[in-house]
Image 1 (cartoon, rainbow, N blue to C red):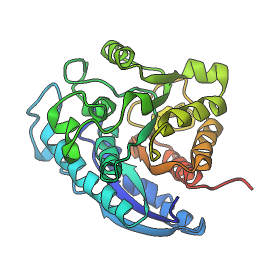
Image 2 (cartoon, rainbow, N blue to C red):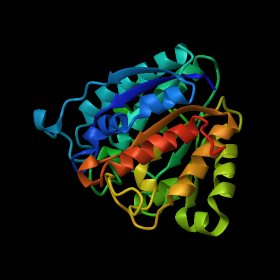
Image 3 (cartoon, rainbow, N blue to C red):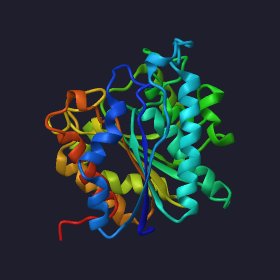
Image 4 (tube, helix red, strand yellow):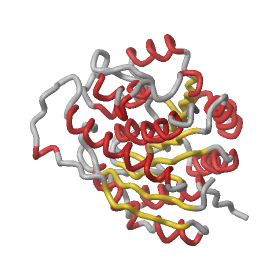
Length: 303
């Protein structure tokens, strides 16, 4: 892993059903990410934020995929920024924003390695599987569709960000922490054979065993993987400031262990934190935890 990181903010809540996650990049920075990464020994470059228009500035034109053109434009810009960071031998650290930004993050990583005739995997830590399409979505919110788009399902505008599809193969995709899955998602997951580690399985087998299996899936015949953490992976007791709360999630220490093992694998190509919503947070606790989890993914250890 490079000892350089490039921090990229994506202040977007166009994909969400609730306002506020557009402030996520700011509160994560306020919680001291840049300084903490520098203390960890990284050369830190913060390129600021991808420009995203607020929803008040535009109409909803597609009620099966709200703000589709604007989300597509933002993810295209993000993909370019991520690929550029990799060209400069830096690990991209992407701060969201709602989880639809993962379309651009993973597209940038996949594009970089595709030009080197290599594939990437993805580890998706989330209370939701985010594998809806406009045909199956109950809400029309695009933050429920990014994993489907990365696998090549959904509107062409989303599936072909960076000019190709799919970005990842089902056999290199691992979802951890799921506890709220829509019927249409279940159908596609079963059709594609995607490995989903539900919270029930994590309870039964332990996060250590599960994340090791996920890493094996994401690294099989790949250059490595993009790790994307929706903060609702955690139980809201620990992370109240998120876009969509779901009870029964991972603990603070389980999340740290997952990120520590991701770092230990040496195969993480990029890392992303999404859905931090300060409007529902307590004393910026969720953003502070987001910083800690990024540091664990970058190699920080207790000793």
